[in-house]
Length: 446
Image (cartoon, rainbow, N blue to C red; front, side, top):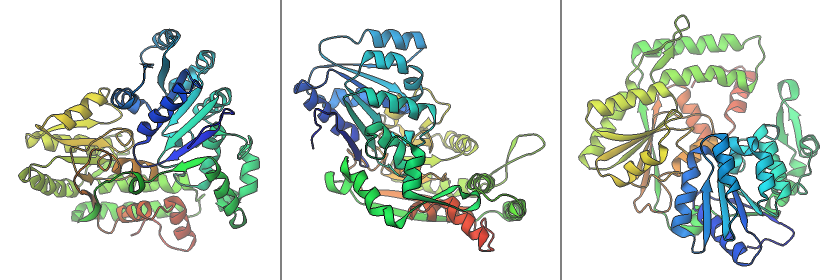
């Protein structure tokens, strides 16, 4: 594994150990005299992980600063990173594009895009800023376990950051070369079979992929589906929503956003909640999954085992936390509303009295370690393959010594079954549902 003086890019696709490997690469380049300044751009929720990992694994002199606080404070911190030792600055994607001029002026030699699938959309501000920052740096490194989250077209933007000579600088030229646009309105990109080999070869030309099985001696995993029966009243509401959602599609524009918006309401209901159109309030209409979770909690408590619970919707998480409080179980919790995420993780990992971790899948699935538990309950799921794989990796990573079990609470005969099947088979859920509709099926029926 080498990086040339011309600034070759290296992409790492692996389920775990990404930051550790990156720290080793940083050390090698620094001691070879090739770099003095490193910029790490990562999601907000995992900035602290880089500081922890450097403290554990960096066997060389360095100075590290995380850019937090007000804009003035971030800028002041950056301006003081001028020592002769290796300087490492860590910042989130939002701040990186807002501070782009200042970061360019700081002149990082190496830029690392952690969880680099975050810049898969080529025309958003964060991606554009990373493209420009990357163009000015001698070395670029992108770390992700999910380079292609849904569609192969996702590779363009990360590779434009890494090395624009691979796929060029124009998204539309790239798209026209490798993809046919199909479906309603020609909005769905499908990889041309004749170009698959070339696309794959170019991806591998600057990529290094390491799987958990190849580089880590991790224990086995087991998936267990727990079928949940919705109460008769809740099932009647659900079936009514299925008919209503299908009727809304009929005669209208059938697109991925439209079909997923309707699926959202059905997923909310299987978790026990439905919105009130008149009051905008959320009503609880089912306790089926909550009752199933109670049984799981009973088993974990009897065995004195810690438990991780992952859910999609905030009302679900609030209800789960109320249940834990009612049972006098101490817990940690991370949602988009929680600020002290590092503290929440530390409590769960290190305090024997904190027996449960509750996390929102979109915010608790990145960069944190929850190996104090070996069982994870998916109370509900979103449609993101990236979120799904990242969440699972929280317990199945370095430091885990026990076999891991994933429990999926699935409401029988509902969209829960389609969502889980799609995620486990790595299928495009929206495309599958659109195909069902065009074949005369109700896409929301199990």
